[in-house]
Amino acid sequence: MVYDVAIVGGGVIGCAIARELMRYRISAILIEKESEVGFGTSKANSGIIHGGHHVEPDTLKGKLEWEGNQMWDALAEELGFGFERIGELTVARSHDEIPTLERLQKRGQEKGVPGLEIWQQERLQQEEPHLSEDIIAALHAPTTGVVNPYEACFALMENATINGLDFSGDTLVQDLQTDGEIWRLQTSKGEIASRYVINAAGLFADKIAEMAGVGDFTISPRKGEEYLLDKRLKGLVKRIVFPCPTPVSKGILVIPTYDGTLMVGPTAEMVDDREDLSTSKAGGEHVFQSVQPIVPGISPRDCIAEFAGLRAVSNTEDFIIGPTSKKGFINVAGIQSPGLTAAPAIADSVLQILQESGLKLAENDEFQPGISKPIHFASLPTEEQMELAAKDPSYGRIVCRCELISEGEIRDAIRRGARTLDGIKFRTRAGMGRCQGGFCTSRCMELLSEAWETPIHEITKRGGDSWVVRAREEVQNQ
Image 1 (tube, helix red, strand yellow):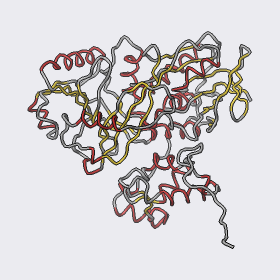
Image 2 (cartoon, helix red, strand yellow):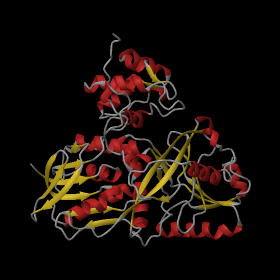
Image 3 (cartoon, one colour):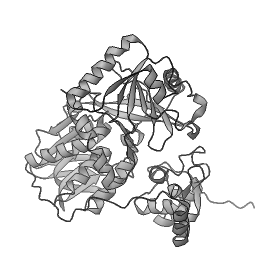
Image 4 (spheres, rainbow, N blue to C red):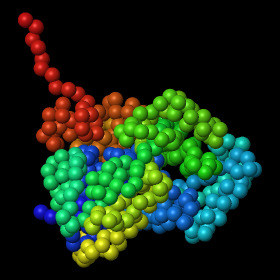
């Protein structure tokens, strides 16, 4: 079979492109080296849909930031993942920083971003009483939102596959060759042929481009450490809090996640290793020393989990989106912040590029824009919980005590494609609470083992060799 389009990379960009492609009568496949989509850069993203005023308008990032921002409401409505515009505050702690707030406000207004206001200290203390009294003013941007990026990836992919997309996980692209019309991708699971190739391989986009013979850019990983705080701090701040940015960084943030818990970070450290997801004592100290002068109620003692992600930074410091000198090969590379925000707009751009490159896009009249929204048992009224549990007793059995996640929700996540513990965790929140899976991990493994008819020692945390238990032969004492 020769596909019309092969997408390399299952992060939020690849998933958004895949879903948009399925609006048309074409054949397409998404190839991902991890077991599930969203397990690379997207999984460790801060989950911020930027307000639209952070990036200069004369860059591709700046253009697509505001375009993408405006598309998330419709996307969340159709696909049922959590998204909320909670707003953000960029805070100034000295009069020297006020011109920066004014510059950001002016930039946003020039781009058409509505509602940007500079709040003085009195208004700020009324709206966010737990901010430091040392903060003298802040720029409020109501257009900023939060989303669980992995939820968005899963929903985009679920919808794309319902509409005909093929997905190949655990598939590493090893080589690409073209005869001028057809691309042949040699992968760890065999050859895949396609007329067009979309290179959305994130941290490895330069390597994929190099294999295709168009390696004219480089990608460098920039690591960001994030620290998740205990639920007892829920509501300490209602909006995302940015310090005043510097010429090279947006700084360390306080982020109320979509689920309400607070997260602090990220750091920004250039590293050599594209697989280095380690956190460090120095990184943690830097993060908490940065946020405590802004929100004094935050303490390192409240940290329940820490993780790191890697941004794919190109040598141009801008997005690289466009056709190449090799017919049918299109780069979508260097998608660092605000890449999550821009993702829907990037998908639209890629479709336009494909059309301009000769791909005929006839509308698919049978396209289904939505998916069924997963049930969140704990948030239902008691009567509905009782009715649901009577109909399906698995919803009456709580597996994750910290987050009150039922067995029914976990079974549903597996039906929707979860093949790993992280696949369940990011679809349901089982394992995300204070005990970090200490109680529910074994039951989640049993449910995965049962559903996929896989021995329990082959169940992994996130694919590959991330086994949780190992098989052993019992030796009888003689």
